[in-house]
Amino acid sequence: MIEFYSGDLIETITYKGQIVYGIVLESVVRFHYTELRIWSRSKIIAIVHDGNKGGVKLIQRGNNEERITRKTI
Image (cartoon, rainbow, N blue to C red; front, top):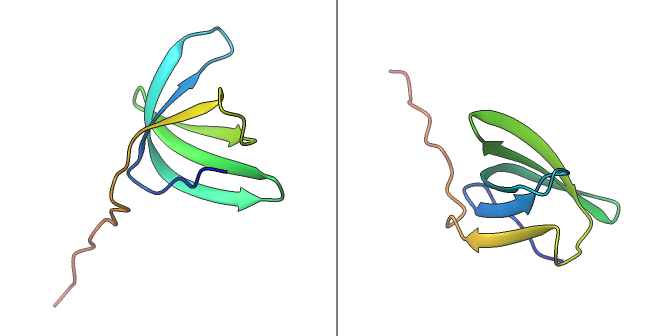
């Protein structure tokens, strides 16, 4: 099964057959599925991926980027 990390660019298909691109915000493995929260079309979308090749395609790895928080002095 493919592992997804924050910042990865992925491609998936909607139930209408449209191709959608999104950036992974969070990836959680539960049981035999991966729950993905992606940012696509100015919305946060949840996707359940079961490991099939046709469901979600990794386009570009995001180098596991973490957002840097500002420290208060």
